[in-house]
Length: 194
Ligand code: HEM
Image 1 (cartoon, rainbow, N blue to C red):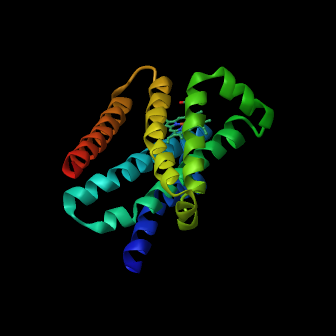
Image 2: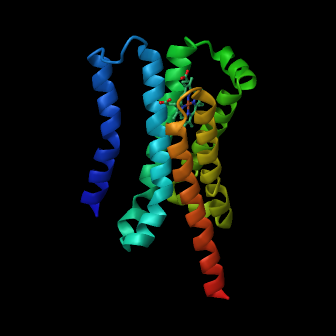
């Protein structure tokens, strides 16, 4: 159990270590700040979708380890989204904090990205077991917002890519499959209960 936890944690940290390695090797191409923004953004959405896939994976495989690691994977989505946010604030905005509000209000792709990030922060803050107990039924309701965060992240991506939409399309299809799975499974459960 503890070994699985350590293994999951180490695997989730690998993309970050690769990023740090690339920074130290100056291996980020002609526009390092933009490359960092793109890479951290990609890992944020990868982990977000992976977190959403943990329940279907548990149901398909019957292995509870997937459900047990869902929180950690979700927190890594928040971790990479925070790194993405920091890269944007530090390297792309040059620490002009006032520009944050301006950009969030004026650029629709930033507005949706930022909204997705705020949802991830709210889910991260309420993820400890003590918060689960404290919020009771509302915890489940709040954590359904993870699907909204996923939709906003995909919209953010669609808004950014101007020519090649294939990457955004793949993420969009994955999200629809995961959402569809949840809806079908929830209906199944209601029928079973009836
Ligand atoms: C905190 C709010 C956010 C801001 C300010 C932000 C900003 C940005 C910026 C400036 C870019 C580069 C755009 C360009 O090509 O010029 C970008 C790309 C991207 N962002 Fe965000 N973002 C935010 C939140 C998120 C979140 C929450 C996710 C996913 C969970 C995400 C996923 C992505 C992805 C996948 C890309 C594109 C990567 C690629 O084209 O390879 N972003 N974002």
